[in-house]
Structure formats: structure tokens, C-alpha cells
Image 1 (cartoon, helix red, strand yellow):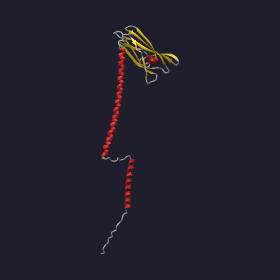
Image 2: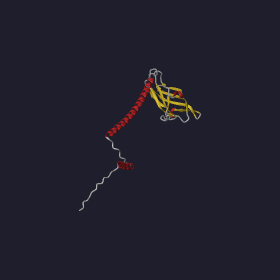
Image 3: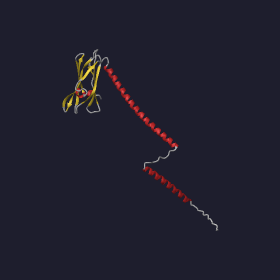
Image 4: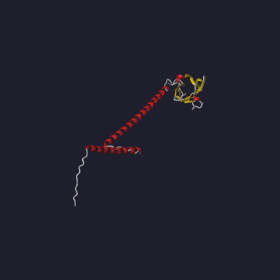
Length: 229
């Protein structure tokens, strides 16, 4: 039986060819990854890149910092609003205190019933005005005062002299004058709306006291002198 002979073949691979094969393999792998990524993007199933332990810590610190910044901003805003509200309340209390001190001052209480100067202030609505009327008593009357009070506005409407009454302009009064019933003072507040085109020029306030004795107080003012600036 003839003996089979083996021949050893030595195959030499060029280094440049080996590098080319590696490059092609890497390109194929990169292409496969890119295709998988694009397919995930199209189907809305993008997989997040895994985080390392250090990246997780940085992410948590960033989230905590963002949360802290949001909380600090909200707390600052709420504190600012609270301070503004408290400041407004304090200013209102100071005005009220000054008002009470003024109307209850001894020199004011010794002159008999009197009318304080009315005050009118504009509102955000055109032709709508907020008013404040104060009548106070003086002397040593223990029974107090009763009566009524009304205001008339004289001005021009469509080029003609026109007179309007507060009891007609303030819907809450329903055409009736303000009822007075006080011992030391009474303050009446509300809003009036002038007709379109009406321009007030003068204001007259009439106070009719029926008790403890009949007494009328009639005072005239210039409109511009009553407007709160």
C-alpha cells in the first residue's frame, strides 16, 4: 500500500492586508450598530447609553441641584408676595389709625356735627370713581345723630349744564340718600359711574340731621380739589 505523503504549505499573510481586514470588520460592526440605532429611532425605542457609577452620581447631583434651585426660586417668590401683602396691610392699618386719630381728636369733637372733605379716586374702569364720605359729631351728645346725606354733581353733558345725584349713580343706593345713624362718626364708601361724556365741575354735599335736633349741613366743593392724586 503506497504511503500517503503530506506537504506542508506555509501561507504568508501580508501585514497591510491584515490591517485592512480589521478595518473592514470594524466598519461592518459600526454599520450594524448605526442601522440598529436608526431602526430604534424610527420605532421610538431608543435605548439609553448605559451609565457608569460616576455618571450616575453626577446625574443625581445635577437633579438635586435643579430641584433645589426650583424650590429656592419658588420660596423667594412666595416670600416676596407675602412681604408685599404684609406691607400693604400695614400701610392700610396706618391709614386707618391716622383716620381714627383725626376724627376723634378733641378739637374735632368740640365743633358740633360736621362734614369732612369728600375723597374721590379713579378705578381701572373708565368713568367709574370710588368715593369716601365722612360725617362726624361733636359736642357731648349722648344719643347720637340720625339723618341722611346725599351728593350732587354739577357738570356738562353734551354741552349742557347737568346735575346728577350720587344716590342715582351708586346702584347700591337705589335712588335713596345715605342713611345716617352714628354717635361719633360715620363713613360711607362706594362706587359711582358717570354717564359717557359727563364732565363734573362742582360737588355739593347735603347732610340733613333729624335727631337730636333739626340741622342742615350744605357744603360745596370743586371737583378737581376732591380727586385723590
